[in-house]
Length: 180
Ligand code: PRP
Image (tube, rainbow, N blue to C red; front, side, top):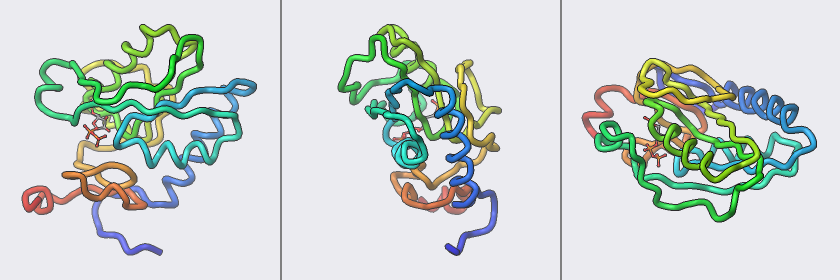
């Protein structure tokens, strides 16, 4: 067992079970198809890596990267694309994979952007949903955990680029946030 601090957390075991559950639903929903899973960098890379290894479909993977979350994003809702997809998604079954949905601004923007490229279908899968923070509606089909409004790190999520490699998810204490 990995020693973990007290406070809000989602354990490695809970994450593994949830990823399996989500993968099973996706496997069933996309049976006979070959979806393109689009990971939103950077946070989604760990979740996406585990998710595809629980899937039994011939999936393809691509990534899109947006500018880091900040106040300008919150006020305008415009997300800057740092790295676009490598491939055409016209007529593809696209599944956007994200670590966390917070205000919803990132996913709302990317969803509309990808929809404008005429995929065959477009759905969203998020591991964590900070529902109480939502500012814009996002059609999320697959949700792992609803989480409280705490600063969460681990399993791809960072604080100042640290903690992404934790096998579990936990809340940062106010002291840790202050201390940097
Ligand atoms: C986080 C997360 C989402 C976004 C969610 O990314 O990965 O992309 O914020 O917030 P929203 O719903 O309010 O738009 P972040 O900007 O921290 O970048 P990272 O994924 O590179 O860590």
